[in-house]
Length: 182
Image (cartoon, rainbow, N blue to C red; front, side, top):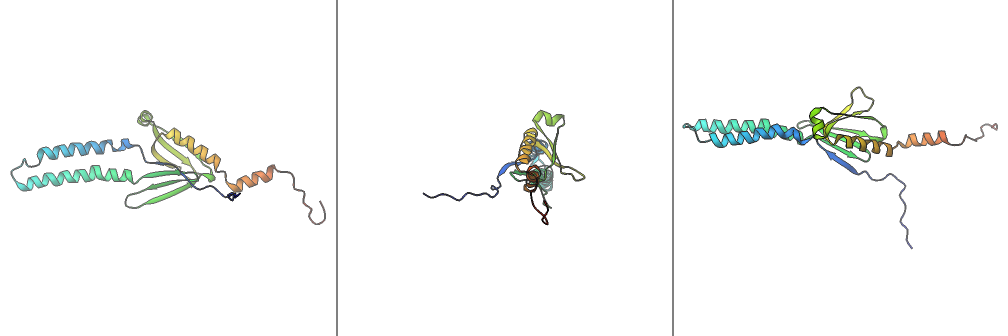
């Protein structure tokens, strides 16, 4: 009979959720793309001079790049990953920024919603870490569910040092002998 050794160490970190801001942020850029492509289809080849047709194409390409491609890339570059141990915030297109918040440090979580966010079920999740400004997960889908999940993850990942101190304080009084006197 073989027995597997039991692992008493911490469990492996697992990804709970990988989030981006709500997709409704791409509504206006997508509308601009549809209108621009329609306008390019209509106006391309309608002018007598070749430079005018090229200018229409160049203008349409500039509009697509500036008003659709860049907002799409900025939206794709922002990501929030929630794991069993931490929250990882990544953002930035040209300058990448990564910030991590450990669940074991403990923090305060607030959900803030405006009227449009309430209609779509999204919201801003404010995480107060004790610093001067809270960390904000902007326009997250299912913000209330994210808040509840973060509360559960914080409870589960109690800091080992705090757990040891709590056990020491709630344990029996110390019965050691120092210098021959009790």
